Image 1 (cartoon, rainbow, N blue to C red):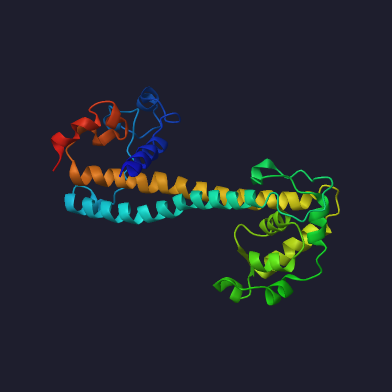
Image 2 (cartoon, rainbow, N blue to C red):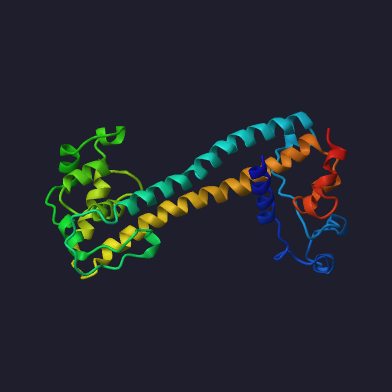
Length: 275
């Protein structure tokens, strides 16, 4: 419940601004405007998101039902997003464990971005060894293990890619597969196109590989952040408004949430209006 209160407050903070709103004096004296003086609220520095539908406005039972739907439905979405953080940490620990695994050919490194969160840089020799594999993606899928449903349906999975590159540096194999996919499975067509693109790059630092690796990592991380951003303003704001309309509709601070939770009348006055 505390998490939802935080998300709801942040949601309203994001939705409230008067930085680009015309000042009251401009609105009142501009002859071209149709806004009447009576339409200007005394609390011009705040606004309400009005996330509730018409049927739930003014109806306590409807507002409560709306709250339950969004609270429990949104909790599932937030839970999925938040579970990605321990999953990402577990993936990072797996990468760290492979840091010293051999074999490795050594030699100059290519300088992968630190934002990829790999425990060490990769050598060009190790990368070239993996990319010298003559097997096509379709052959890797056919010959390799199939540990999950997608791999049984023809997708390239990491275990199959690892099996096809026996004798190569494990961390390098993982990095090249990560350049093909944001997860542990990838469409064979997509994987083949990306793999061919990386192989065609003969630069000393394997710039195409580094770019593709950084791109997939960024997509993976940003998708989690974007999901949390959407769930915060949308679900959080809706839950806060429906909570207010369903349990303390007469509280004087409902018109300018979330500021009213902290600065007059304050959340500590809500019990006096609880129904």
